[in-house]
Length: 203
Image 1 (tube, rainbow, N blue to C red):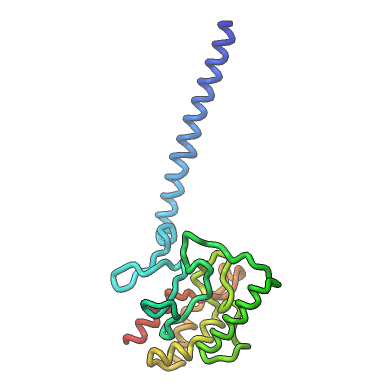
Image 2: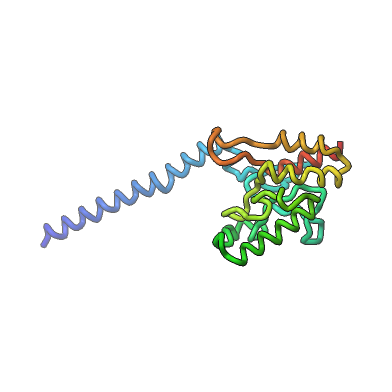
């Protein structure tokens, strides 16, 4: 009986030591090491890629936002517009609409959006790119394609009293290539582009 109790006690003590060691390593040392590396080497990204303008935070380069006429739900013609979002760019409600390509609701919605985007930008429906009428998988994608940005150049230039050449050059400067040269597609960050547009229009 005594041997049994002694063996059980040793096993419990060994398990307790292992628990304490693993807690210290995986619950304290590892998180601290990862946080230290992130803050030291990737400070901006580790803190949400916050974008500042005029001395205040204006958004995150990782999360899209709407660019509507103040006090309305209507898109402001003076700004480049993002792709549609099922969540209204709410980072707490990410996710796509989960509708299949042959779903009648999706087909109808895409058709309506195409006509609306074409009319808003004074362009033919055939020129409207896919990302102008479909949301991303996360519903908070901050990027649009260069094709969608180019579609908006004339309208944005007109609304800001700029030339189309000036605005097109701005889009070119803010077009980012594929990640690592082969991942994804070329893209434009709408927030950074609109901030640069604001500076150009003010200057």
